[in-house]
Image 1 (cartoon, helix red, strand yellow):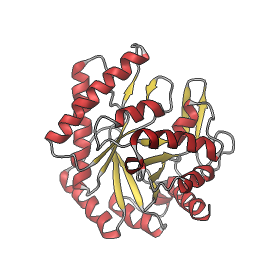
Image 2 (tube, rainbow, N blue to C red):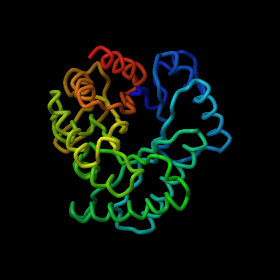
Image 3 (cartoon, rainbow, N blue to C red):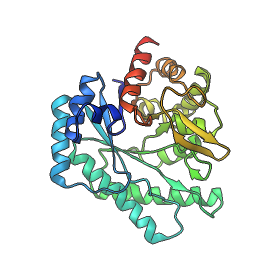
Image 4 (cartoon, rainbow, N blue to C red):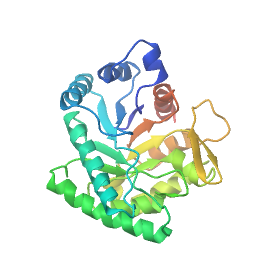
Length: 281
């Protein structure tokens, strides 16, 4: 089943008097949504008791939960000690995700830095192979690890790069952030064909079964010459991308992803709007 939900707690969540992530489960369910992404953006700082409590709340409401690993992961870092920290960030996120009874861990793969693009991609790929070994050693191979397409030119994470990374291990599946792609490619996503071109490439390279339930981030994003500047809301009519062409592309390709809205503050409302658009497409 295709799923829709927000990244984190929206402005509406707090405006309605809610405070705790456990309450997000019923909030999301009551909005007619199906999933939720918890962000460990600034570090995995959660007790086991809290993770279990959140997981029980989401299980009770039958809302699937995923997590976003810390933003400062960089598998192309020239410093080996910093790379070791990146392994730990992903594994700690997986541990917390399992306690929450989730199975998807999204992470940013790398930043180019002062290396050439080729050097940075090769370093990231080498380390993602090591990460795959750590995932198996720690017994997390039944979970899904989702390297994300990135929105800035200096970040590693084009469609082609993420697709190549996902070939490393069967538990790597893409997190395709269409706002990031659109920002990186200066407004490239406009038509159904634009979306189908990227998705058909990934299906051809990874196979339909790997892509059938892939992970999606979606939001409108302001961009400049170097790519992503900031996340916007669906009220924006300047930058895009629009969701309707993607909804049509997903139906035509028979894909049923897990779709997370990353709109700035209106993520729950915009997730609900995406679900409405999809059902009517």
